[in-house]
Amino acid sequence: MVLPLSIFLILLKAIELLYILGLYDLNFWMIEILFVILIKIIFFKTIIYLHQKLALFISSVFPILLKITLIIIKFQESNKEKETFIEYPWVTPIGIIIFLLLYFRESFIVCKLKWYFDLKFISESKILIIYGILGTILFLLWSIIVNFIKCNQNTFSEKICIVSDSEGLIRYFDNFIIFLKNIWREERSAFENIGYIILLILKIAFSAYQFFLIFLIIKVLGPEYYIFAQWLSNFIIDIICLIYKIIIDDWEIDFIFNFIAEIFSILGIIIYFEFIELNFCNINKNINRNINIRAEGESIQLLKEMEEDKEDKDDNEEIE
Image 1: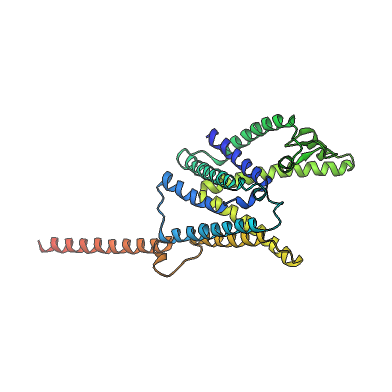
Image 2: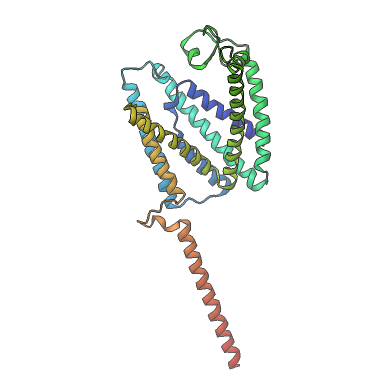
C-alpha cells in the first residue's frame, strides 16, 4: 500500500511539472477513463455493456480527434515562440508518450486503491494518514535537495525554475528561504502577513480534505467516478472562464477546442453512468433500470411457476 501511494504522489507532481513546462496541449487527459475501465475489467472482471461502450467512444474518441487537430493547428501558427513543444518539435511525441504513461500508471493506482478498500478493508482515513506522511517525507527530501541547486540561465530554466530571488537573477526549482520571504514580506504589515499564513494553513487543510474526498469517491463509487469528478470540476471552472471570455470578447483557440472536448467527455460519461438513457437501437437494454425490471419480471414469473407447481402437487395429493 505504501508503494502505490508513493507513486500516486509522484505522478500528480509529474503531471504538474509537465504543465509548468508548457506541455498542457499534449495532455490527452480524455484517455484516462479508457485506462481505468480496462484495468477495472482486469481487476474486478467488470462487464461493459453496449451503452457504456458507446459512452466511452463519445467521451474519448471525439476529444482525442479535437486534441490532435489542435496540435496540428498550433504547429501551423506563425507565432511559435510561446509553446515549448512547437519551439522544440522533438518534445511533442515524447511529451505525449510521457502523459499517456503517467495516466496509465495513475489509473492503475486508483484501481489498486479500490482493491485495497474492497478486498483488504482498509479505511479511507488510514489511507489519508499514510498519504500525508509519505507526502511530507518525499517532498521534504525533494525540497532539501533542490534548495541548494541553482538553475542555469537559459530558456529551459526560465520555464521550469519559477522561484527566483528578489532581483530575479538567481533561479531555483524550489527554495526554502525564498518561500519564507514570500510568506512574511517586509513591505506588508504584520496583520497582512498573519493573514497570509492563515490562508496557507487553510489551503493545506482544504487540500487534505480534498484528498479525503478523493479516496472516499474511489471507495464508495469507484475509480471512474474519480475521473468524472476531475472532469466535472474542470468543466465548471471552464464555464466560468467562458462567461468571462464572452464579457471581455477574448477568444483563444486552445480554450475553444478544449472546451468542446470537455463537452463530449462530460456527455459520454453521463451516458456511461446512465444519467441519460439512449432509448433507441436497443442501446438501453442493459442499463441498471432495465436489468432490474427484467429481474423483477423473472422473479414474478418464477413465483407463479412455483405456485402452479404447488397447486398441481396439492391436486395430485387430493386425487390419491
